[in-house]
Length: 438
Ligand SMILES: *Cc1c(COP(=O)(O)O)cnc(C)c1O
Image (cartoon, rainbow, N blue to C red):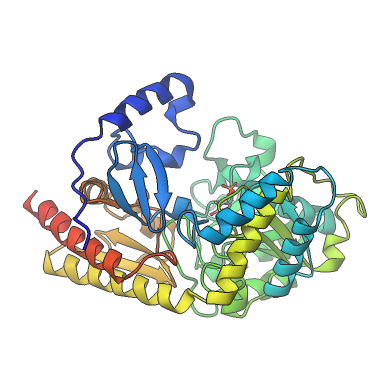
């Protein structure tokens, strides 16, 4: 047994973050990495990852449940991924021409993802969703997009629109700088509310290019679709002559070797993917029905491109990751560990007198404090921010790295084992006891 991490000194982190703040906006290259949602301490600056662990610049070790927000299903620095990237690097990281590894990755995606007849590789999930939406508009000749509150679909202008108050179907933006001309074409509805979708489609269905959703939501915490919800959504969408897009940037290959849509028995017209399929390097993909993909340039009139899209490094990292997932099938084991951990956390919460609930899908779950059921964003927002912030800080000092937001998932990787789970449970026991002592 290794010693329990005793996290006391983070002087190196503080020093690095001071440097970061002077030259990087807010000190972070993506706002979700800051600790603003959990009390505003400086974030921990990590030196490296090893399997299921993160090691910070002061040498402190943390069991990692962030998985870099989803991609690292094989944990950090998996030897097969590292070796594939090393070789590809030696052969030239960028060619600017077609090359075999991007074609192999596309073939593997088409083989594994039901309903994916053709694909286009991108560099990020943001681009994958943005392009799928543009394609849906090109194909249908319509402009409106329906999406769901609390879901994150990347940071393109249209995807930063949320619902306006009241019964308005005209969105307002979550971000400054998104023009009104963009927001007026995006409608944001509550997730898991089929009546609302039906009502809106009956009114404006003939203007709707696509209904866009995560089949299992990962970005307001994990939220599973109610039974029958996705099938009904697909039926209503198609009845309106619109396309169904599944944003599977988190969910593709997270729960089984394929899409969450296939797992749930609903196949969309278009998929957007990312994260796991790049094996930790920048990658995204969108695709689906061939008749729709024929609209993409150079065959069709929908333009989309990318200097780094399908680059050799990302392609081989994705291929190596998929190969390990296919050959080793770590899913049942990861699911069992995640279930063990989530169940233990719920028991601990009850024992310490904390109200809490867990939403789990396979190896991902969210622990919500102060609320018993979360099926949509309104309910997710009711989760106790203060308790989560305290828990986050206490767990960090116990050597457990959780995503610094109550709206994120805990991801168990293929490198987590019973030892990590047991240590995490013991840490959570002490953290919850501390919270209840005030
Ligand atoms: C992460 C994420 C994106 C954006 O992907 P990036 O690679 O960060 O641009 C889009 N949709 C979902 C569901 C995501 O989780």
